[in-house]
Image (cartoon, rainbow, N blue to C red; front, side, top):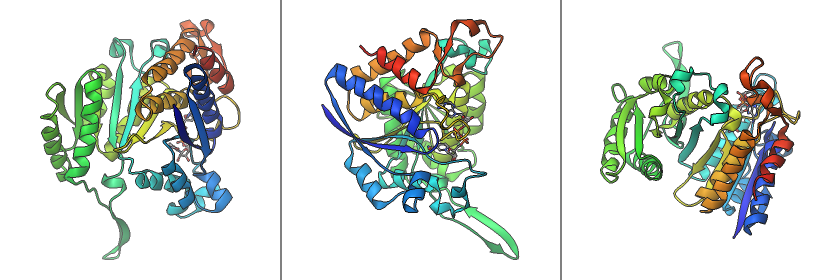
Length: 368
Ligand code: NAD
């Protein structure tokens, strides 16, 4: 198979972690007989520096011409970087929002899985962790509060800011279908999260989810209020399989779910439209505090590349091979700094700390 992959290395640790994911893809290509061709695409702070804007029309066209896009991360230190002196629509993140909208990436998938070997990194008590957890948050990505009309103006002499939260039934239906399709291939349980006791948009959300649920009788569907869900994620995370939710709730809950797994450096993500195309990126940001030091954890990006193999290229066997290689490396005791056991922990002496490149090499060696 031959695949054209657009590569957005981006800012901060982005280029370092993307290089390792490419190395792993190339190893998969060699072992399984595929060709991956890469085209570098500029986005974020590096694009501002090079051409004065975070995303050009040419960059959007290049992404559209690819079969899928692999991304590192964009942005810098929001307190000190000159990129954040620019008006909001010129900042690095504006490029990502525009790209998501241009590619109609309405479905964001964020798995949150606790690996047995990293149990100690989980901030929850042992009794709460139980047998561990493995969930995926399916978040609507192109509607809701982040895309509604907004303004700040003086009303009766008082500065007043307004944001609007809009969803139509079609937007809800297509993300709900994605959620149920994913649940059908997993443990067949879907939790739809809303705030239907207060918001009209949530009441419509719940009605449409119920309509879609009727088309998937094999998947059990429950509704949960977002405040309760935030509590349940730290009280009993093992209860969740697929969490389906709207844009802002998903933004917040997926970060919470990330944290209970112990490391942001382990968490992959995919943003999909209604074709095979997807944008694959780690859940974390550009980590300016560790950029250039060679210590960033590349696993989230490598697992994002595995999601690309699975969802965009239908290469399930190859995706499994990458995921197994990651598990094996952890079993063999290799850790980047972010997932090292804290001093005094039982496993402290059984693990070896490695850098970004070494971790990529170790994973490649386990793809046979
Ligand atoms: P961050 O995720 O970049 O960093 C938070 C903490 O996690 C830091 O201590 C960092 O060192 C650590 N971390 C993150 N990824 C890691 C990895 N792979 N390995 C080891 N440690 C890792 O969040 P932040 O500091 O709030 O944001 C920094 C910049 O990233 C901001 O400009 C923000 O807007 C941007 N950002 C971009 C994306 C994206 O590109 N999709 C997502 C989130 C944040």
